Image (cartoon, rainbow, N blue to C red; front, top):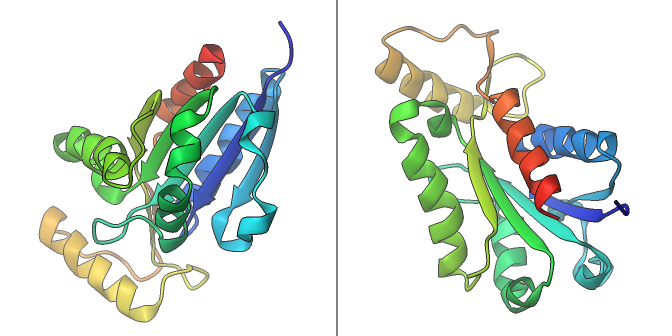
Length: 188
């Protein structure tokens, strides 16, 4: 089996999607393939790698108030034609706190990946999934004061319990992420 090359693009707000992209890259490397990972926020258009040099592309975005990050939305919209013509496999994932809830998972998975991609003109998705996010109320969190306050309120309304100021809740299912990545890797 020859070595394959995978390209991972992601957009993150609080680090959940970035962490998933990093873990996916580790799994891909552990399975004998090459991977290049880019945060779209730090990648100017003229530095985007040539898709034809890769066997697979995975794109990930965090979800906030039902929206992808601005950088992912812009990237997918601007490159939808190239993504549709891409000869390799195309995967997409989102990180959202709602995806960790079994009652919301399927809706989040379809609405925020497949349906959202179709609205931006991407019809070719070989795989897609939704993973949980982060609820990080610690001092080192990337969330601002207002965002923490809003999430604490929502958390209390949904769980009935008050979120502690220093709590950290990782809602990502790492086994699910590993299965997705291994399956994507296998399909190349």
